[in-house]
Amino acid sequence: MAMNEPKTYFIRTYGCQMNELDTEIMAGQLHKKGLIAASDEENADLLIFNTCSIRDLAERKVMGKLGRMGRGHKRNQVIGVTGCMAMAKKESLFRKFPHLDFVIGTNNITDLGTVLDEVLYTKRQIVKTDDRFEENLDYLVAKRDNKIKAFVSIIRGCDKFCTYCVVPYTRGQEVSRPPESIVEECKKLVDAGYKEITLLGQNVNSYGKDQPEWNCLFHDLLGKLDKIPGMERIRFMTSHPIDITKELMEAIRDLPSMCEFVHFPIQAGSSRILKKMHRIYTKEQYLEKVALLREIVPNVSLGTDIIVGFPTETEAEFQETYDVLKDIRYSLAFIYAYSPRKGTPAMRWKDDIPEEVKLDRLQRLMALQDEVSNEERARMLGNTYEVLVERFNKDGKMLKGRTRCWKKVIFDGDESLIGTLQQIKVHSFSHETLIGELAKPQGHLKVI
Image (cartoon, rainbow, N blue to C red; front, side):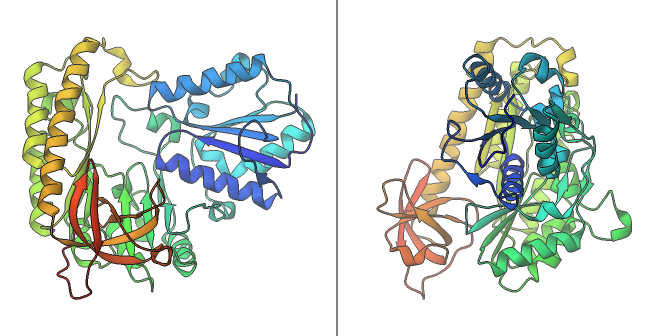
């Protein structure tokens, strides 16, 4: 096993934004210990795979990589696995990959420094996978590469237990972070010049429910963050529809920094399938909430997640999902074909929808979503939108940014505009990207 004091590190991240943030927090701790980032995994003394268990493919990729490293492992490299796969597999990873040095679960990311010391000192394989997240000061030392937009974690874990999902088992129960700690971190970010903060949680709407004595629910927290001087934009993800309250909708309408975009995942359009998924709402309840949100925030854009081919889904039930997509007209939809995940209740049911049927349903939904999105983009032509300018696009010729409602926009401009908010008049679009030009200051502004 590799036991020299590592000087460089490389973290490969799989999965969601929570994992991206966990990587930034781990990188911050390694920098505090004096390590520097390597340009790739080959040249790093310490290599960490920060993993995801939601999609089977991500897990298979990591397993394949670890296997190959075991066969040709000549270098003096310390290797660790962190994240959801570490929680799901724990010590069993050592049996499969004897060259692995440590396994750290999602609730122990702030123990990385001590685990590393222990590995080097004892020359033993170390596993740390607590069921509950404990906050400590190291949590605030995230090393962020992006200087304009930042992720900030507000709640960890999930108590919803949807039958297809491993998150409650890999990230544990819901634990809200104290509001003072969140406000302090956001203040620091705004003072450092950050323009947009995305609040993260497996279910942000549950914020504060596990700590009633704080008297601070999600909409209360948003009110506190909106008051930070210089706070330009706040986003949040992910939401569970059952916890989207009228107060939250009013906060999106009333707080200037709140972006008018809500990720509002329906998952399926059939109430029977929703019940089988343990989503704890019916299609009718979901549609009522969407109607209320649109009444309170008329210019809101919606995003969704949808799973097709869930066990026992009939063609008629799929058609219900199709109709919901057609009626609601989401701005953004992540559409997946169901695949069984080990350790979830849905594994008990036969995966009885043939692959070709799943694929057919997936393609039909995606084609519909493309149609809806193109119509929406066509309606945006000629209007002016606020865009946060992030960087040059791939060819380095045009600047790129996003509207408040998450639309990608490119336009001509110079480097001095990066990191600023600009009014952009949209004149055309290509695929999913809107194309525009800097508007005259007196141009009519549309919020979308």
